[in-house]
Image 1 (cartoon, rainbow, N blue to C red):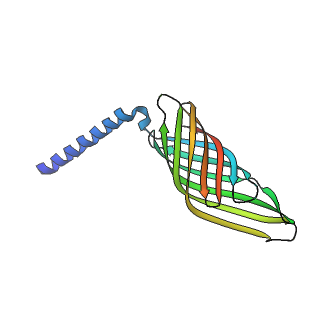
Image 2 (cartoon, rainbow, N blue to C red):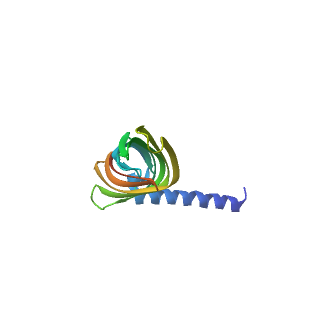
Image 3 (tube, rainbow, N blue to C red):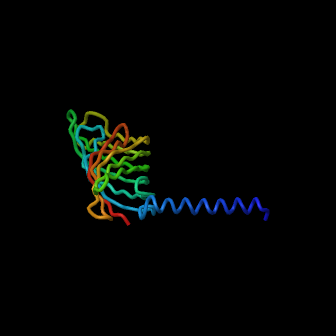
Length: 182
């Protein structure tokens, strides 16, 4: 090998070691990634006369103490509503993938969380009684989605959050959730 190549390799290796040592000093044990899984429950508003109860599951990965990624599925129970002389039932489902950011308040177990990504929301409305109005409607939208939440970590491996999710122009959700970190 030529001297220049050896020098560049040595410089690159020493730079990589210096960066990893700096990251270990800056972040401590939070430098390693941390996966988590959770459940949530709340109210979903899908532009229908009545809000439905929504249930969901989510999983994520924290790359460090601030940045992460998260995927979720949220589905509603079947909700009945009356419009005119007809009774309808609707159901909403959403699938999303987000980038997340957490701000940890100093010396407390509390944090604020923001997320931004893309979600697909499916809404199904079906007439179950009566004769007026459309028999059924199914539609879905995929678009920009996001949310904000406040959280509390009672232990190092458990988190509880309350927040608002903007799922699409036709749906949003207020809810609470809990997750387990590994």
